[in-house]
Amino acid sequence: MDEAGTSTRRSTRSKVAPTKQPKTLVAEQKSKKASTAGTKRKLQDSAEKAENQLESLLTDSKSPITTMNIFDIVNYENLICLSEESQRKLCALLPPTALTTYQPQIDPTHPSHTNKSQGEDAMDVDSNALIPERSMLTLDPCVFTSSFFQSAALTFQDHLYSSWFSRKAKETDEKCAQGLQDGTMHAEWKDEAWERNNDVLVLSRNTHDTDLASLARRSLIQEGDVIVYERRFVNGSTIVEKDLLVRSVNPKSSAITLLLQPSVAKNLPPAMLVIGPSDPRPPILTMEGILSSVELEDEVLETDGRISRTDRYTAVQEDVVSKRISDGTEDPSNTVAHVMSTKAAKSLSVWRWRDEMRGELELQMIQERGGRERLGTVYHLRNL
Image (cartoon, rainbow, N blue to C red; front, side, top):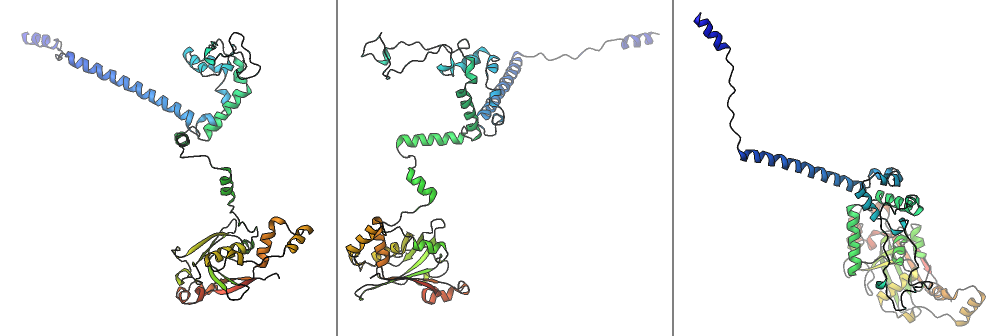
């Protein structure tokens, strides 16, 4: 019985909880610092996230503001719902004309401006005009329905959609402003912009005719052709001959770029007459923007150097020219051009490959004018 009582007493004993180690003051401080740092980090991250979202809304071209009614955001009703601090900041950004206390004044430089309280020699710094207070009490609610304000809001929305507020656009604006300030950049001249957009070449001072450009426009002169210039002068002792390779034809203006030898040399080197020649090297010369036969002849004779400018064209009798001008059959401004084009006894021949000859590189190296054959000749006869 004693054993049974003993077992009963033992079974009714409560279990003692294990002793916990006492927390030190250092551990408690570390835990508090960790929780405080975590809270600060979360607040900082949320603030940065909110700032990035705001920047994206106001600078990104894909912002939701670009697709919604801007006046659902910017209106007097929404301004009233903001805090007083936000209202004060926004009102400070409005112009003085948005306030009910605004009073228009005449500019001091206007003749109608009079100021009796100041002398004639008074300066602007002597004025003590009061600056109206910008607050919700003085704000005119009609400013949000003004056509000027609404136009500015729509302009902001358009600029936002066009990426004018992006970081790249701001960097470009800063670069342009810096370039204008230090003189390294300027706005493109109107004439340069027009010539760039229209790809217009300056014509020769002697003529407005574009006979070669017309031939190139009809594919009678193509890239890779050889134009053979020949002119026999009056005395018969001087003959100028020159081979010119058509390097390119402008697709818009049909202006021709030609390659030729300097001085009295006639033929181009065989390496320039094959298909797909390399870039020209000295002494090969380049003629750019050729539009007419007269312009081509001027350049060729200048390169040849044997004929002076006064001996190139036969003078026209003054009575013939005067008669044409008086009859109205000749424009005085085009008289020189007409004389030059009609008095030049010359010929221009176009040489071109046959289709089966274009792939024969070896034959092109050894044959005359790269194996081209004469396609046709234009004769300019002397008008005696």
